[in-house]
Image 1: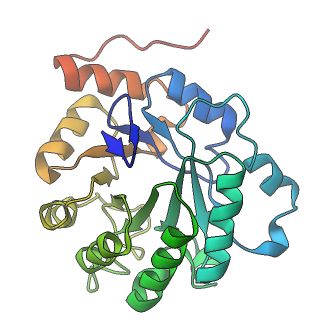
Image 2: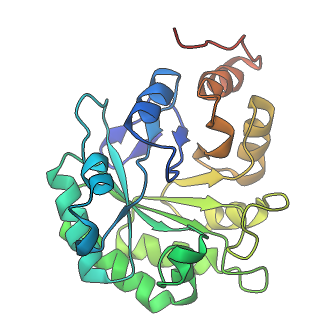
Amino acid sequence: MQIGPHQLANRLILAPMAGVSDKPFRNLCRAQGAGLAVSEMISSNAALRGSRKSVLRLDHSGEPGPIAVQILGADPQAMAEAARINVGEGADIIDINMGCPAKKVCKVAAGSALLRDERLVARILEAVVAAVRVPVTLKIRTGWDPANRNALAIGRIAEESGIQALTIHGRTRACGFSGNAEYQTIALVKQALSIPVIANGDIDSGEKALEVLQQTGADGLMIGRAARGRPWIFAEIDAYLRTGRTPLPVHPG
């Protein structure tokens, strides 16, 4: 799988997870077979830029490339500036968060709340793409709620804005993490776009990974919760997709 000029070792990506996807965990997942590991989200709020958490999240020393950093916010110019700062700190790929369902994020009209304002989505994407020379990617949900699934419209905006890959979690914001992920919307978006589409949601085994690839036609898979406490899931899924068999877990140490 390729994102801009970056050829990934495979099509398996560690999802950005607040409080989980720190540098040690990203390095562990990369060593266990993830083709890419996206950082915890970094706020575009300038007031938080000097905080201890933000400073730690800007440190990518010793991390294998390409380095993908996710940024969060609702103001186009603040997001553009955050992208520039992170590229200056070593980011090879900038990912934009429009999928986080957390109340504290949606309360400030960021994360998945942005899916309700397609004009603002376009302004943010265009500003960030214009601000940096590295590939910009986008992570979304299928919509705000089941009655308002607009992932296809957002995907078209993303492609027109210069976004180079789109990740879709197969739930709406209202669904949170409950119920089963639905993949029909991801398949619909994949059929309509020419940029890579990455499927996310409930991928916890090689069998499930293959099923999701077959249902969606996705170019890649993003794995989040299933990797917590089980970073070798990437090696297991990669082996299954290549051979049809799941190897014994390769534990670190």
